[in-house]
Amino acid sequence: MLDAIWILATAFIVVLIEKNHLKNSWKRKEKVTFFVLLLFGTFVSIAWVLGVKLSNPLEVIADVYRPVSVPLSLYLRQFQ
Amino acid sequence: MEKMKISVSQFTVLVLMYTIGSSILVMPSSLATIAKSNAWIASLLVLLIGLLFIFMYVKLSTVYPDKTFIEINKAVFGKWIGNSLSILFLATIFVMEIGILKDIGDFFTTQVMVETPIHAILILFLFATIYIIRKGIEVISRTCEIFFPWIVALLFILILFLIPELELKYLEPNLSKGMGPIIGGVIVHIGNPYSQLIVFLMILPFVNNVSKARKGYFMGVLFGGLVITIITAMCLAVLGDDFTSRNMYPTYILGKKIRIGNFLERIEVIVAISWVFTIFFKFTVNFFVLVLGITQILQLSDYKPLVYPLGFILMVYSMVSFPNTIYSKEFLIETWPPFALTFFVLLPLIVLTVAISKTKINKKDSQKSSSQ
Image (cartoon, rainbow over all chains, first blue to last red; front, side, top):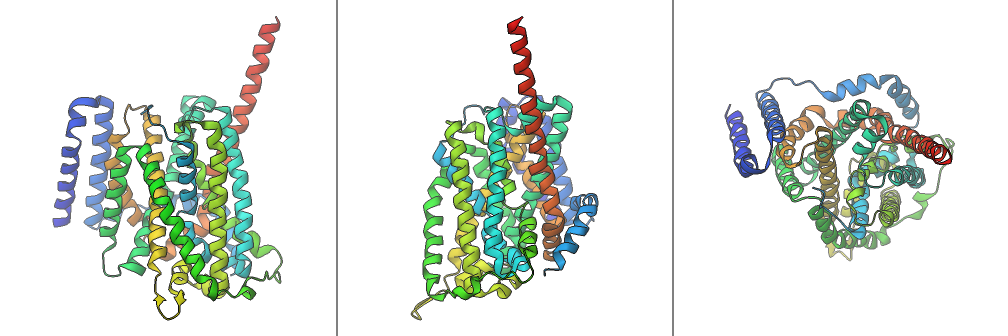
């Protein structure tokens, strides 16, 4: 639980660091991108420290490439 | 963002560091697992194939000299198809990036600082990276130029002090299984490191002399590849192919073997230092390219909004996606080569073909209209 608070504090510090940019130079599009990504990042980090099982993106890639990777690994295994 | 300019020599050094990158520590082991004592031949062959890839990337940059790869996609295929291809390309870079981050953590927690939790190392590393990226590509390349002599000196010391330990009989090629093992070793390393150099298509437009930078591109890759080949041959000649293939980080063990007159011993940390520098620049360049690519797809005016949030995401997904070493090694050997081949080699090849035919059709059209 304490870890989650630390992550929230870090996200807040990041907003503080970017305060000048948020006030002066960034337009609406940049601000939206920043907050959406930051929210997603904070959300994912908190889920991870609380032990939620996040889906692994590499599993999807491995599934898509299975028709190629299985013969490849069979071919390579004969030399190992 | 348009004002950023780097010089040709800085670009060359950046390419060299990127090529040496993470491969110098990991590549001898994975090559020797498959190719055994022919690993150094396989390493040379991978370099030759890698130079072919670079030739293709350079050709692509001659068609559109002042555009990054994301912009080339858009110019060739139009907004929707081009951008969706670019998103797939950036997803590949993202996977590579989390792999590199996990590599760093794994190396430190297993070899150097055994009791430190992996997050502590990753967070410190990410802090340094985020700091340097917010300063821009100029600062990245200048830092690279400053640290380059250190890397050269450290690797030179490593190679020089190991000469007494060499046993050249381990280097004799053994073709009892035919060319199969060598080809297998080459296939595994198609995706790492040479095809990853496509990320420099995103940085090439920032160089102040693009035509000279193309030569620098070739030189950087060539020297980087030669360094990797020499280190692979050293690993084989000092440790033998069996010991090399059973170790996760044979180059680090190589440093432990240095022994000059019972006085100069255990200086393996010079390997760790040079590796941390090179992988730092590999990680930083990838991060920069990722951020720049997203900026260009979303057409933002500044890339800084993306840097901190992406740090969070990279950190978490490097832990989630590679839960253990076995999984990451399996992924690297089985899934990564075809995956990298699709988006780092086939995609640019298709883009190049379409781009060249498009410019030819345009030329014919303009000739027709001028003759009428």
